[in-house]
Each structure stands twice: as structure tokens, then as C-alpha cells.
Length: 57
Image (spheres, rainbow, N blue to C red):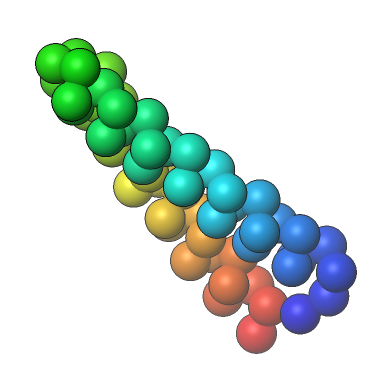
């Protein structure tokens, strides 16, 4: 894996962590629709991470 691919995976990982945190915060605050949006973002980022990891091979 080259430097650019490593940076992409790290960025995607950080974005997933942020999306999960915002999902949890909004669930606790009672904003279910906003929490669902962040859950969808998390799932999309998961797919992007899988593509980035597969590209390194």
C-alpha cells in the first residue's frame, strides 16, 4: 500500500468514527431521523473503506 492509499484509509476511518459519534449523540438526543442519516453515512463509508483496502492488493 502506498502513502496515498494509507492516507485515504485513515481519513475514511476517521470519518466513520465521526459519523458513529454523531449518530449516537443524535439517538440520545431523540433525533431519530438525523441518527438514521448518520447511520447511512457510516454504512456508505464502510463500503468505501472496503474498496480502498481492496485497491491496495
